[in-house]
Image (tube, rainbow, N blue to C red):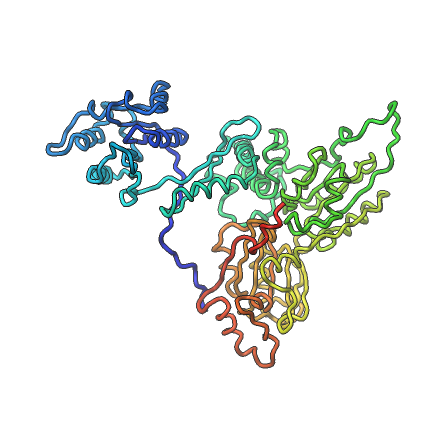
Length: 605
């Protein structure tokens, strides 16, 4: 069965962002809406020309002010020349202006858009539809896109309900914008949706974008054109690609590409508040990809002792699990450690910002640079920093995602801390191996479907391949940290020649698989497919959303719809292809679901 790609469904818009330097936006009308359109165009670095009856004198106060500030030009219809015989005065004037605009406006020859704003419903001097149609045809004949207010069929483009973020500290407007369109199904509702989205986003978001922009600039090599090296968004779907170490023989292009990969890693993994606070020195240190062997000086965190005597007691280290991501899934012990006990938090990169936000601002938080390709260096740096701080009398929280002992390298840290005189307290967390499938509606065990389950990793120590368990019909296989290597994992399961990477029977190609990304977080995404089609399915989604887990087995479809819990009945194997067809749909290769299950908004912090 060949994979069925998503069928396009019309009615959407092609959302683009235009940069309009050295181009002109022409606006017809002079009311508040015209001023709003002019401001949006000016922020996009477009020149703006306004044409209105009566010129500047009849324009709204904002347009008059911007004209006095020489931000835009306001022309009077009556002052424009006419050319075409038989045309009405305004159409004749506009045709002449579009043909010989350089005589009246230096920017007129580069008109990119026309906005007809004097067609607003309910205004006393509203332009007639017939006039708007003639202007529309006139512009279209010159391949100039038109937006006609309140006349959807005379619009080549529409304006999204947009918001531009400001820096929370300086108040300066940042490079980040978000826009919402309902494609004509409710402009007022579109504005409300925009407000709802903006209210849910971090106040640090705009500053984070600007800091990353600065970091991108620092990462570039002046001697090269931008298309001569691999950029951070060069089409690689996953950010989990290792950043190569610096080589003494690397070329200028390799140097720039390596630095851009660090930009991508930081953009993906660091909390927004951390990105927004980056200094230029910190950016340069990240781009260098180097890790200090000596811990950061933590003396500023220590309380001053009386009379200068050091009477501090020995510190302690807590190895803490933060759960899969949703703050409500923290254990009480973890919550207490983060909010009441911590002097210093040393956090892994995938602990979400919502959990880090619970930590008091007086507590220093450091994020591990444990990106692919430098995990060992970052791991050692964090362990050394924990011991150093504990020796100074601090309570150190070593914060791990999920459960520390489920592929969290807790054992290595326990032995390291013990060797340096500290017996850490290990606080369990909810493991994503169990919570991830649950959030996707998948039971890892289910009577009649899955009697056992196994948890394994998709990548071994130092990036080596691991042996995956063979196929058992009654078993659910959960693979952590393997999505970035999905083709290799699938090959190991399906290919009879991959016995060195699989201990047991080959898996059937029609076996269901789910990939759960960002489990328990608001942007959770669940892809369900079969082993045969899942690689193509994931590639069709574009960028991945780390962290992701794989759930493989018949439990994936057990609770779909009315349920299918007879997988282990005698003789049903003969209908497995039909079972999958009823689940996914005949001829359908995969299905995707975004967001958390209904009801989880009640548990938001």
